[in-house]
Amino acid sequence: MHIEVRGLKKQFGDFQAVNDVSFEIEKGHLIGLLGPSGGGKTSILRMLAGLESPSSGDIIFHGKRVNDLPPQERGIGFVFQNYALFKHMTVYDNVSFGLKVKGQSKEFIRERVMSLVELTGLKGFEHRYPHQLSGGQRQRVAFARALAPEPQLLLLDEPFAAIDAKIRTELRTWLKDMIERVGITSIFVTHDQEEAIEVADEIMIINKGRLEQKGSPWEIYKNPQTQFVASFIGESTIVENIERLKGFEEAANWPGTQALIRPEYIEIGKLSEFRLPSATFQGTVKHLHFRGSEWMVEVQVGDIKLITYRSLEKDVLQPGDEVTVLIHRAYLFNDSDTWIMENRLKVDPMPIHI
Ligand SMILES: Nc1ncnc2c1ncn2[C@@H]1O[C@H](COP(=O)(O)OP(=O)(O)OP(=O)(O)O)[C@@H](O)[C@H]1O
Ligand SMILES: [Mg+2]
Figure 1 (cartoon, protein in one colour):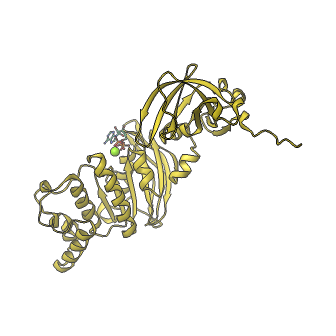
Figure 2 (cartoon, rainbow, N blue to C red; figure 1 turned 45 degrees about the vertical axis):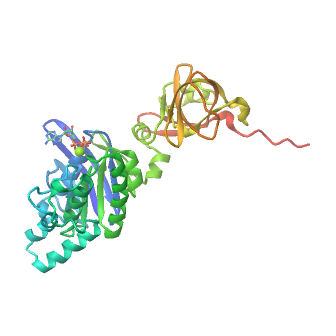
Figure 3 (cartoon, rainbow, N blue to C red; figure 1 turned 60 degrees about the horizontal axis):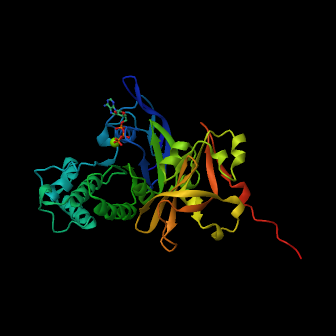
């Protein structure tokens, strides 16, 4: 289903929970809705589902305005974070629930439920009750139940929030694969940027009721359009006075008020390791965190604390070590724009002709 949302607003009393949100979703795409708590993600899903009515704006499915259509006529499947299975019903009855409501024949129901049970890897569990299943299995039942009536849009509101980290990683890979196989347009809410980046075709970042940015995970990472997006996606250091750092003196003349530096834009090491020592400066290692595949290193330069990564292949650093630091580039922001600033001193020297 192709989805279009125009100027969507939701007001609770005098609080603006969703503020002028517009977007389009291509048929079959999986969208990750990402943002901090209270940003308005659930409110957006509830309005799409018809469980809440917008204060203003249009919701358009397949070119047809559905604002006044009741939830059961919108062709939507919903999966919540807290399973919300019917406790007194078996897996089979949970999955068949929506089909019974629709008045489908017994044979039709049996065929559809068994194919979904198979698809979701729950074969052999049809006669179990929810309390006899693990969290991950319950969420798969919830997923099968949402898909049973063949919805055209699937809404998943933090479906794995209550599941521990390892199973969660498995489940999200499973979910992506499943959604691709079924080919259904889906919106997936999460707090977890890693989860969104891994699963979604496109990400929408919602903050304080507004859509900050929409794009592929890579686009958003590479070209964050607001300071909020840049600091939300990936780890980074916010610097107030970047003009004090070598190579970025010109930032004093830019309209940006703050700068953001990603860990991968910073190199640290011995002075002799740098090809362009003129662009470097000295810093002190403050903390080291082992992250499994690399070190995360905090380096103090004057009153600025920078975060970077260091490969396990290189010499192990200790807190207190003096290191040479090279910053390749930074993002500069003001209220409405973002610029990428390259280190001015990093340009290669002219070749020497003999
Ligand atoms: N029925 C309601 N009445 C009043 N305020 C509400 C209501 N529903 C939501 N809100 C408020 O609207 C804002 C957005 O809530 P929403 O549940 O959409 O956020 P969210 O992005 O889903 O947050 P979370 O990540 O914590 O689930 C919050 O400040 C919330 O308190
Ligand atoms: Mg929510």
